Image (cartoon, each protein chain N blue to C red):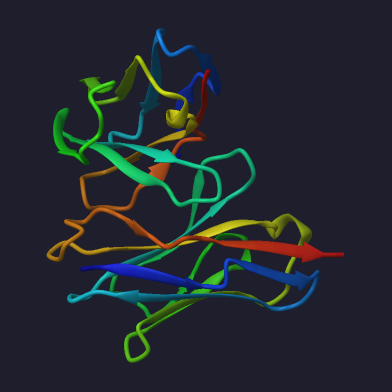
Length: 112
Length: 116
């Protein structure tokens, strides 16, 4: 089973709202990733967690705040987003960092 | 630095025809190579991967790809296209000891259309 789940599937939020995206996997993977994907573009890496520790932050604005409460869960907390942050947010996991990544279905975010 | 070039942002084939999606990579060390497929409004699904074993890699849904070091290519093929193959396809490279630190570097993607 190579399933990564993400909730919610869709999210609409105003620029002053605070919301969270959730990602979960039960494959025993110890690396988890957040990507942002704009329409007709490839995914862009945002964050990498390895053994529940943040190992890579690709210079993402502080209005995006990742959290890895345990080895199965990855959250992305959103606050004071801008309309240009509207995108598909993808979570992925791999057995270890630098190994094959498996993606979730994504959360489509619209910021008004 | 690693990079991936996918030739053709849009490829259109007839149902039953050969599918060929091109991918060339640049890497200073032996890379790992991947093809992912993305159906509309969905995440990325791993089609196949090359990790320095056999150069001809078979994947899901009848797709395969051949690693050619001399040509720095990893083209994706399928002998006979099906309507359900219509999707966006991404080639990606990673390497452990080069600039990507094992993270995926994606190509820009190729949209495959299949005509009845």
